[in-house]
Amino acid sequence: MADTTVPVKHTEHATTTGLPSSKLAMWLFLSSECMLFGALIATYVLYRGASVKGPYPVDVFDIPYTSVSTFVLLASSLSMVLALAAAQNRDIVRMRLWLLATAMLGLTFVGGQVYEFTSFYHEGLSLTTNLFGSSFYVLTGFHGAHVTLGILMLLSLVGMSMNDRLPDEQAFPVELVGLYWHFVDIVWIVIFVVVYLVPAGEAASKVGK
Amino acid sequence: MSEHESDLQRELATPMPDPHGEVAHSEHPSPKAYIRVGLVLAGLTALEVAVSYSHEGARLITGALLVLMFLKFVLVVLWFMHLKFDSRRYSRFFVMGLAGSITLYAVVLMTLGVFGGK
Image: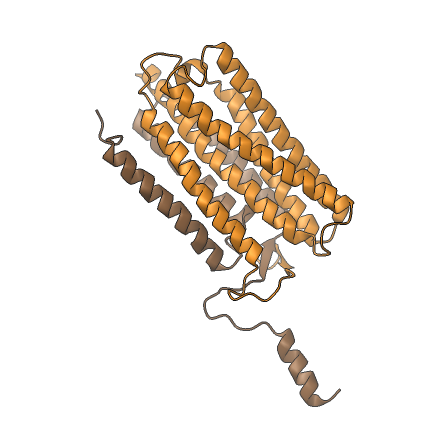
């Protein structure tokens, strides 16, 4: 790994744990977020196949479209770590560009989700139509809200950097926001499979029989 | 500068040995390594989509999708969230929440008969 790693130093105050408190707090926060999204995903799984009237998942899902959205969110995770790498190398201009690229990719994802929700609504699936609609909109809506919050955090970082309001060690705040952003990405990794691909796979399996 | 002072400065500049591997400073991957991980993630996602269109048995498809999902999850957490390189204490906090939520909701779903097969 010697040729693929760069040393990183964080400016931090002495703490009883020997770790930066803000980073530890972020990990604890993400740990608690596991409980939140765990509840929402478990609720979706619990009500899966329990709707007594349609539309059902296979009636409304457009897997190619959602796959593109997934690639967009994955690309945003990559641009986020590239922003962090630039910040660690004190390449501030490149860091801002990668942060803006991440925010734009996040906006594209949220825009795609809004379009998806609108098209589902026009196909007759609302929050109160059936159990699938309720659990689907609440789960993916909460995720979309988290992405939106992440975009605001990214744009705030860019704004603070341009106004010289970030500390000299610009990498640390970028790393903290990056942790949140990647968490949002891993939640989508689970949602994409559990909510979208598993029902699609089951439907494809029935066609094959 | 006295010899004693220079020894002291050398000592302060040397990181303290950490018997538990719980260091606050870390080495992060280079951009090239990040791009390689990103390409692997894109490949795994493409594979997931392809698997969802296959006409194999539903259980096989679901199992394969869950394995691919797990691989992507681990890759992002280890490389993009740097748990592979950071202090193990961060990993413990995250795993605590993750394992706690998986256990809790798995028990709830089992209690409600979701995995029972009707």
